[in-house]
Image 1 (cartoon, rainbow, N blue to C red):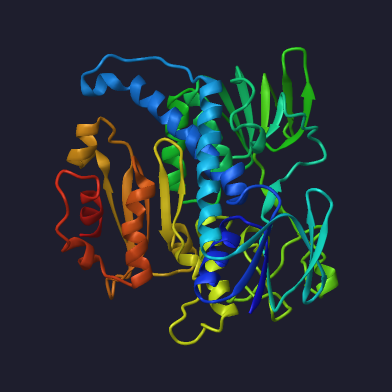
Image 2: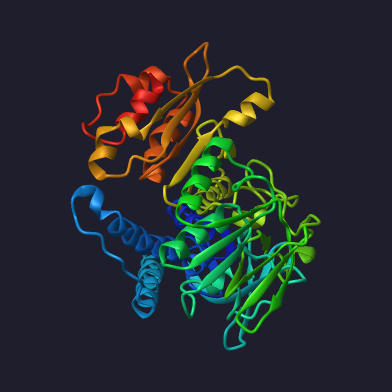
Length: 452
């Protein structure tokens, strides 16, 4: 089986490693570093910087645990070196893994010239045509830049100019209050920047549980973040001191820098999809079925390009499922990826995580659910650590007790949500969580209390 993969991000790497173990002859084409945008520009760099900010915030709250308060600012050169080091180590580990599995990795770009042929173009201009029985396109996405924003990478930034930026902004205006936007608000506020957030709706995180969004807004306001609700940015002007962001309600916000966090667009151009007869929708995504197959039976799409949940974890799982389908392992033992059961997290402070059915969604559907909520303020470990913000909320079926979903706001929420994610995926009951003997004192005890 000649399996060609265009794009070495989470989906591509997972498809390659899993496919190689299943016996496929694999060629992977990647123009940058293995790990893709998740390693180079998005997940890993941003979380590395957020981790630095988290330490700064902890030291600022040190008096809660009997220590003197410290006010620190990040060393940008050291931070830049740290981010690069992490990225390089991860890319090297992928290189070594793929090499050990016999995957042929080509540094360059890939383009389909027919339904079964891929043209690989190397950095030095050399070209090679590769025959393929199956093709996976997983080329990711890039930040969306509207016509009214003249990005210069200096004062007007996209998220990819901020890992880290050339300087810590004195006053950063963040445009976009989705997941990416609020993470940048938290990050730069912890670095000492004054931050204003343009919120086009009436709450941050408009697609999330209102109670979760309210908890984050309260923390933002407490830390001095300025929220401009019901305002949609329509222009950015340069001023002597920086920038002025213009909103559709006639308000304007002056700052030293502006950062765009208003979504992404798929990298579907120049891939030769039309040469292979692959359908691309009006937004540039490649629609797929539950096997990640496009309209052409042997051509697959995964990751951001597929238009599904834009999470590295989802992309990785898609890559694994693609490899299994390519190798014919899609029988009764093969489970389709259920996007509704994918856990996600937002690395603000406090962290936010959720999985499965949301409370607002259940009510909109007229669905009967049992909702139980426990604040961390009653958790011994949270009090010991001096950070009792947030809560655990679990949704279950009142008739069967099966766990349907949950959300967590608080320290280590991204780790704690794993317990609820397993329960949702395995259709466990709340009693299965309640009857588990957990460590004491631990934040996880709040999960058992919320399930009770």
